[in-house]
Image 1 (tube, rainbow, N blue to C red):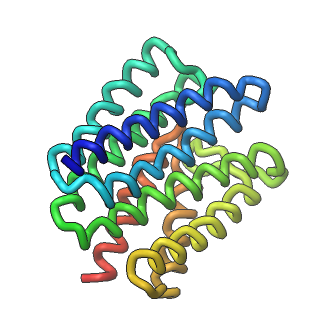
Image 2: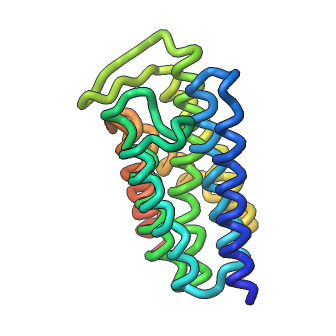
Length: 216
């Protein structure tokens, strides 16, 4: 029963965030998109604490893979897409990353931190990097068709360090600063070279994989 309630609450939470984003039309477009990008990931906390059934846990991301794919095609909710048609797969990659890391780590509660670190870094780090880069980025660079700014990349690094430090402390009661630094550097580099929203897939998977290797 707790797992069913957790699934229900997690879906309601995501729907509320998306609904709020559709009301932010008076704000710059990048803000409404990033608002969803950052806050949707908090689904992970609800799922980690309440959803004990493995199959229920992976059902939510499966649903949102389908939903986001249809949204790319039909543009039902423009606030979670990008203005560029070729970049609109970002939310789909986001959902795929959530599914893969949920499937890989929810079979064992002690592994939740592995998936959580990658997803939180992707959502908060990449989200704030996009906001700061769009508004304050003046030093642009391009690697592999990924158009970024130094200001955005620095934001990615700093926010990633804050997120990993905080999440490790919450989950473990301590923080390994060597891991924090290495994971943040990797996340920043991956974000820097990833074009067209695919960083939503590469950042969480590579960060989580590296963290898993570190704790073996």
